Image 1 (cartoon, rainbow, N blue to C red):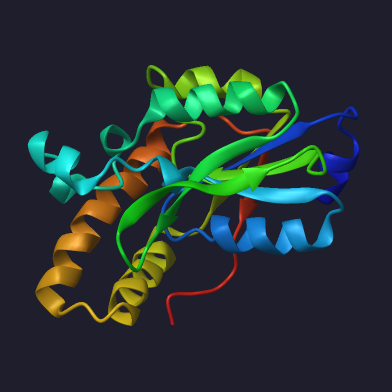
Image 2 (image 1 turned 90 degrees about the vertical axis):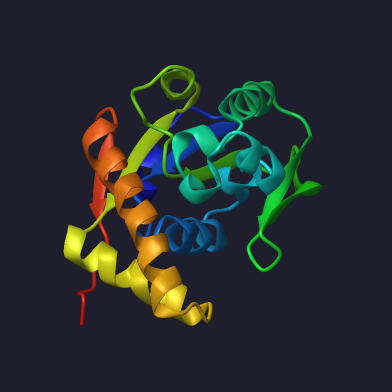
Length: 197
């Protein structure tokens, strides 16, 4: 991936790190940002709709699905990033389960923005309009059984009981399958290592 990034034209570059939940996108983005000069991470999760809006729309149980994000707002943010300069953006606080407005900043000192999120390559209205804004697209994935086990461990680590884990997993696996089968082809595909054990 580093060689492909190095080959990009100078100026602000946007690299999409797409993939299903549990694939390791966030970890890869953070590790790459630490190694690549001028890099920063933009997580798509800051564009989660608030739980009150999700409840009103009947989507609270499907949080994390494409309809539970402000895709148009995220598309607008990507357009602003293409123009260079400073951009302030929201970040998602997992502990409080809420997006925090104005909590993130990308400045002129960040010529490389690693954008990470499940649906960056989703072939659906609004989402597909994001693809042309990226200089490089990467699909991060793993075997479905490995992904399912990683997701189970994530929810266990957050102290959820078995009934809650089962609900979260059902939602996560539906989102996982959508990403795996409904995304456009990426420039690069990376298989994240590990096993279900």
